[in-house]
Image (cartoon, rainbow, N blue to C red):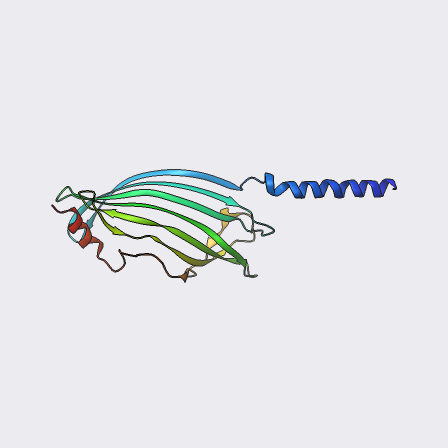
Length: 191
């Protein structure tokens, strides 16, 4: 084997070894977590309410296969407590869920379509800690993103206005659907 052929063969072997090793050693493009706590006040159809939110979020951003677009995966858990300032009673939501990009399709016009799968649930408790409503299930939705000429860099991505659409309606119990939140708040926080 001549010098040039030996060098070419060696380069191929090294490239193949690196390519084979990359998936096993590839680190996420970004990952992190946050813990947010906030208190706010609002009027709910004449009832003064204090809202206390405590939310934990974990996320990871990874490449998949040969796609130039990064895929997001996020998990969320937390509580929201609404205190009726007239009665002192609290209506509490405890929730957990996960969402992930299921598919990303390049539209060929500087945008991509992300189809997202989300699953999880919420449980609602009255002032005595009794479970009163449940909302478990999953939903799939899609939206378009303008990637501003940098498909591998999500920092400059912008959602295309009015592109959000349901792909699959919510499954599960959906016990809060069609209910009046303020009426529930008064009912579940009253003695």
